[in-house]
Amino acid sequence: MAEEQRDPREVRGAGGGTRGVRAEEVDAWGELVDTARRTVTDGLVVGTSGNVSVRVGDTVLVTPSGVPYDRLAPGDVTGVDLEGRQVLGTLVPTSELPMHLAVYRSTDARAVVHTHAVHATAVSTLVPELPTIHYMTSALGGPVRVAPYATYGTDELAENMLHALADRSACLLQNHGTIAYGASLSQAFDRTAQLEWMCHLWLTARAVPGLTPHLLTEEQLAEVGERLRGYGQRA
Image 1 (cartoon, one colour):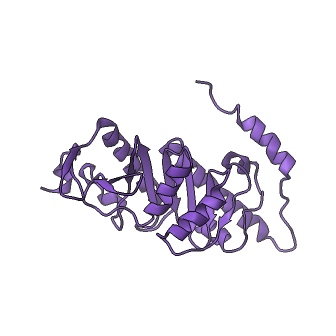
Image 2 (cartoon, rainbow, N blue to C red):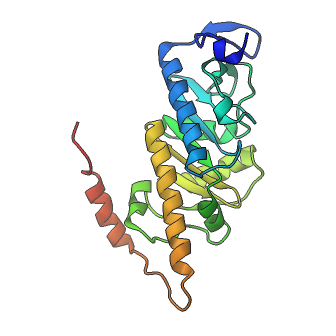
Image 3 (cartoon, rainbow, N blue to C red):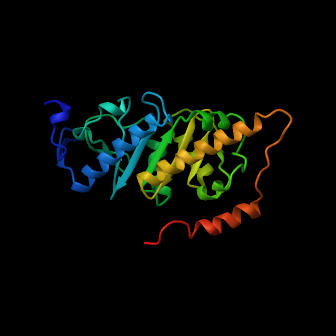
């Protein structure tokens, strides 16, 4: 049966078994695919680079490895448990699964977005942390650190990432890209986009000959952090 015709509630597991997909997983998969496609249309990834995940209960839905996002269909649901055992789908999960699972095990994240955004990746090759070029640094928990380089898909990279993420909701991966998490896919994506924008801003400012960009102090960022706690509409 073609992927587009497969009932999303009947997804064959990696071991050949079948378990019913819960309604919330069907909805979450649709949002995950939309988010993954947005990383492409917004220029945060090229081709099949980058990956997205969302946690539903104790199941982590993830983009599969090497599959263009515009080809993903409802029946392609790919999910693992928190130990990385595949529980939904036959497509191989993203090679960056160790990073995603490390975030879920160590934080209260409900969604993770990893990209190869060009400006953020460029910054990751230049400095140990993104200079405090804009007050939205506070929205990510403070100055954004760069995790030391390690081969993609390895536990070493996941460990380096966790150190860089301490008390932060996003970090840069040296010579690699970005990772951000949030309470929802939309928040994780917004944090990713904000990080890429700040990296672009810093690269633009530092490119002006003879001038050094003004950076914000810890006190200024702390003040913004207090104001951000009351930002937006009340529930």
